[in-house]
Length: 243
Image (cartoon, rainbow, N blue to C red; front, side):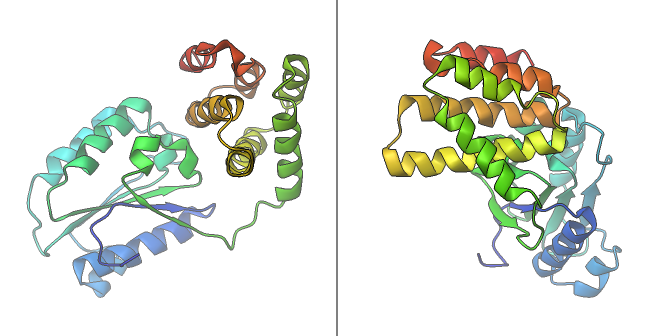
């Protein structure tokens, strides 16, 4: 990707400090001023950081939108860095999407997150994604095995439920990593076997569950939705909206 591209960027990784350094380096390129940007002194760089546990609400994004309508003060561009972007609730993400779809020509965005999959697909589709692959999960093989066991059980409602409820007591981080592994495995299966309805329905369900998990849905409620067979058509979608 061209570093001078105006496309919004998602920076994904487990180290918030490292992501901020990467975002500032990107902003320095956008604004042509490495010294001020890296020192945190540039007036045309704005950072939204409510902390790792606080929900980013629609009013936070509306404030960015209002500010984005003002032209840059000391540069040809304005950069907005949103920390913990996975903490945006649905309304905030939809408000951000409106800016991403029709941004002022001088506006640049960097969304920092530990989990890009927690962002709405419509938001991700507007952004280039950069992942820090040097940070391993530590349990990648176990997560892949759990994901494969779940996918192998999709055709059997009882087995599916048993596998899903076996994750009920795991930590939130472990469940998040497992759901991401399920997405990766399902995409591989779709490439190998074709887009079977069972695969595509489950892809849709898991994609909807990840944002709910980030916004404090309990692992138990997430596993309850996973346990429901997708054969019921729209039932999965309705369940996920109630989490």
